[in-house]
Length: 292
Image (cartoon, rainbow, N blue to C red; front, top):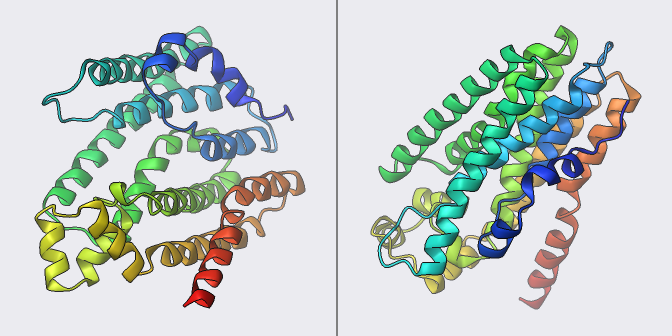
C-alpha cells in the first residue's frame, strides 16, 4: 500500500501566493480524505486509482468549503474584504474544476459523473438546511445530523468503487467519523462567542432555554456577551465534549469489527485526531468544577 500523501499532492493545486496574501482558506478535509484513501487502498484488490480519487475528493470538498466561507452580506464592505470575497469565489471554482481535468486525463468519465451528482446533492442539502435554520425549525440533534450529511455526501460517490464487504463498513465509518468531525468543529466553535449564532449551542438553547433567551435568539440579539453567558449557563463545551466522546466510542466499536489489521491501525490513527482533544477539555472542566 502506498503511504498517505494526499495533502502533499494537493499543495500544488491549492497553494497560490495571491490567495494566501488576501484571503483565508478552510481546513483541508484530512480525516475524510484519509479514510477514503485507506478503504480504497486496503481492499482485497486495491484500487488502481486510489490516490487519484482521494486527491480529487479533497479538491472538490475544499472548493465547496471555500465557497461556504463567502459572506453573503455585501453592504458596506471594505476593499480588502471585497478582494477576499472575490478570491474565495475564484479559488472555490478553481479547486472544484481541477477534479474534472485530473479525472479526464485518467479516462475516469464515470467518476466525473458520480462526483458531479454528489456536488449537486450537497448543494440541495445545504439549501434545505439553510431554509430550516431561517425558519427556526431545527433541533440541536437535527443540526448535527444535517451537518454530518453535508460533510459525508460527496464521499458516498466512491462507495461503488469498493467491494461489497468493504462498502458496508465504509458507509458506517464514514458517518461515524463525519459525526466526530462535526462535533469537534462545534467544540472549537464554542470557544468563540462571536460564532454562537447557528451553532449547536444556539439550537440547544433555542430548544431548552427560557422564553426570554429564546426570544433574544429568535430576534438575533445574541451579542458576544449574551452568547458567552449562555455558553457558561448551559455548559455547552462540556456537553459537546461528552457528545464527542460518545461519537468516538461508536466509531471504535465499528473499527473493532474490521478484519484487516492494517486497516484497523490506519482507522485508529484517524480516530486519535478526535479523541486527543477530549483530554484537555475534560481537564479544564475538572479544574473549573474545583474552582467552584
